[in-house]
Image 1 (tube, rainbow, N blue to C red):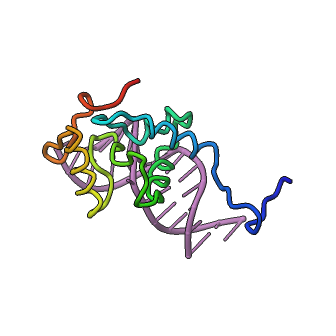
Image 2 (image 1 turned 180 degrees about the vertical axis):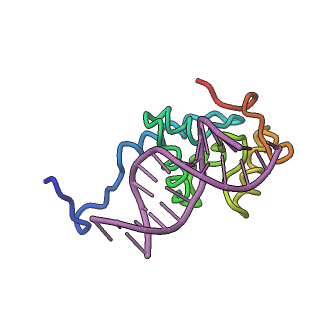
Length: 111
DNA sequence: GCATTGACAATAG
DNA sequence: ACTATTGCCAATG
């Protein structure tokens, strides 16, 4: 079947989103990654906005470390109130936010 | 189908 | 350091 009807198939998982989630799950505690780098590591160098779109739909109970994803300026891109939670989680892992910024040179994940 | 939106990023002023 | 502009591309209306 080249076509899939909503009635008998509920699997929209594209390879891109799958790859993004797999990379995301690998990010170590206490480190961060940017949207663009996460996308690039998943094999889609121009999909930074896709990453945000995916993270936005993650269920609240997800075990994925969504809070370790920040933008290329070292800032949190999430609107409040989620931003506070993200800062708190990061600080809990030892990632400090100074003047609203995170030192990428220090915390960015490089495998 | 076209227009707008968005948890981005690079560049220019 | 900050704002504006442009490119990007799937999702949404």
